Image 1 (cartoon, rainbow, N blue to C red):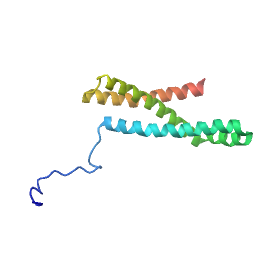
Image 2: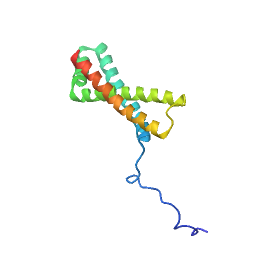
Image 3: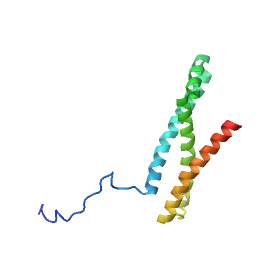
Image 4: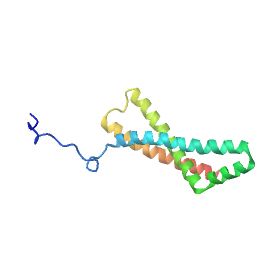
Length: 130
């Protein structure tokens, strides 16, 4: 019984062979951006707590926030916020029954990625220009 149809069973594709659909990638990215938001919240909270603690603690926290690492964390968190917001809006449309077809889901995934990048760049421009 164990040898019956052993050669006819389909093999599961290896992860390097299988290509995830864009909707699956954006779903995974929504979870990742949720965790990235926590990194930004932790950094901002530390900075605010240090501001009310002592001048020395604030100087240390301010140095970290203004460093290249702080800039990367805050910029990544800002992009994650836009991405997470747009993904949430997309899911509100899904809940209403719109955009559930494969082609529409693919287009909304592309719009999600493009929109989050454009909004993040616009936010950086506003932040540095004004």
